[in-house]
Amino acid sequence: MRETILDRLKAMGIELSEPAKPVASYVGFVRQGDLVYVSGQLPFVDGRLSATGLLGRDVSIEEGAAAARHCAINLINQVHAACEGDLERVTRCIRLGGFVASTPDFTDHPKVINGASDLIGAVFGDKGAHARAAVGVAALPLNAAVEVEGLFAIR
Image (cartoon, rainbow, N blue to C red):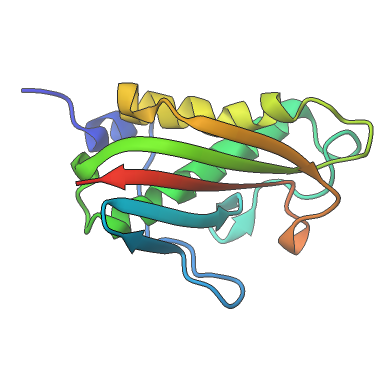
């Protein structure tokens, strides 16, 4: 019997939950044909942000990467809902866009967003290889340290 995506998540100690509700005037994802566009996800864990403030001042690279991983879990929750509970329908993670709230002199944005990329790769295997942007910004909603959006292909 082959290992499923849900098996991999369980082995990593990750339990999927209801997707986070939007904090403004938008929806969590939009499905258009075989594409699922997932809105930017903040690092919510049990209803609280796991990291707030700026990288380079308030948040370490390791803490930022952990927050990006939490964003990726929230992305997967949205995709799970878009696939009506069947993550095996995912054929590819096409792109991740990562935003890192940081001081002007901070330049390790890719290391932070690796937290999301590494999890997507571990969960989806070869289907998790994606294009990516890692961008520094002055501030994010709710003072979050990291936000990640995604584009997935499904069948």
